[in-house]
Image 1: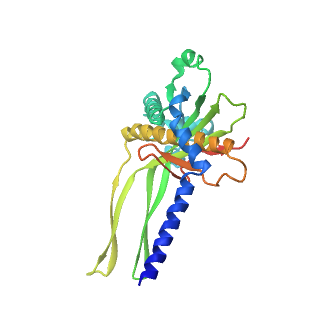
Image 2: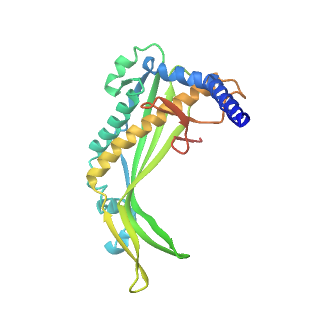
Image 3: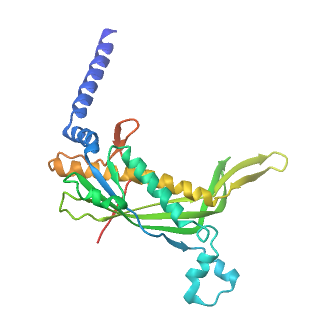
Length: 280
């Protein structure tokens, strides 16, 4: 009875040794160093002057009986549910506030456009982030609620109001001559559909009942803040992984793209939650 316990003990011991070695790997050590030294880095944040807005609900043109195809964009925008009423300045302010506050939590010293002169006196360890463009697209998003019941497939499609927020970033290390690509990211917010399938024993039929929590204009301003906060994390992760790519020898760098959680102080591999580099 002692041998199995001894064997398990050895396996546990080996796993601790391996994890200990991994925790001391050059990659993780550099990541920890970069995170700890963020307070020594400064970032100049540049924001766009306006937002591009497009209403993709072209089906409205039929009901409006519009024949002038040259002005369809402006007509669609005028008849949009959200974009025509959106306060661009408030949306941008929330987006930038979420971005700046989140990035400063990593330790970076943040500078805004009106602090350009002060930022220019910094000798080193500085970055420039230019949120080059923000575009809002209003459209319909098809969401399918589905269920299998006694080998039968049931579904109900909802056409939900939706707004995509597309963002383009230019992120440059001012101490490096390496040209960086433009980075892109997108997200959307929709009506919320809450539905249930219910079997009616009397009629022997499946009934579908649902409620729609409609997207409101004020929710878009809250969404802007959340997006800015999330994209600040994307920015930190990008700078972190670029640091690892630069300083770790070829063949020693893992294929992982690391994310850092500033609250838990932990690293973990990213999935799709990152910027998309755009080719020239």
